[in-house]
Each structure stands twice: as C-alpha cells, then as structure tokens.
Image 1 (cartoon, rainbow, N blue to C red):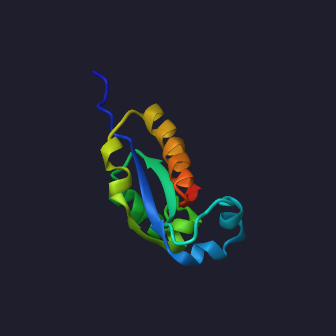
Image 2: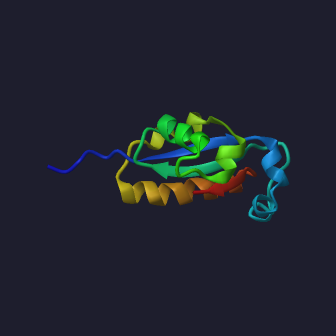
Length: 108
C-alpha cells in the first residue's frame, strides 16, 4: 500500500537584517521594500518541527537559523500535504509567486 502524501512546503518570515547579506540581496533584485523577506522550503516533516531544526542548527539554512522569525502558514497551508515530487515543484513555484509579489525570497 503506498504511503499517504506527507511532504510539505513551508515559508519562514526572516528578520529585516537578512537584507544585509549580499547573497540574499543579489538573489532579489526586484524586491519591493516593505514586503516580507522569506525562506521557502520543503520537508517530509511537519513544518513546525522543520523550523525548530533550522533554529537548532540541524540541517539548517543559515538565513533561517540566524534570522528566522516565524512560519507564515497562510502562505502554504492550503497546499499541504502532498507527494514528494509535487512538493519539490511547489517549492519552486511558490518562490516564483512570492518574488512576483515583491517579496524577498531565499529557497531551500
């Protein structure tokens, strides 16, 4: 019997100080000041558990570990859970959508 879909996309709000990171700024040339700065990722874990692991330095993205503030479930909950391949694709698509909306985005 196949496993039920258990992968998730998630979005973490990042503190404004992430804008001081040159790589983050370079990746977001169309950022609209005042819009959120975020990290978009995908995981086989519950997004809350994954966020805690980032903050604890376990398989962490540096930006989330240093500047992650909170999850923004209103941006991703409607998509979850999903199969692995769908989550991989949605991670990219969600990042593209948020960039188009003027967000500053870093992707996992």
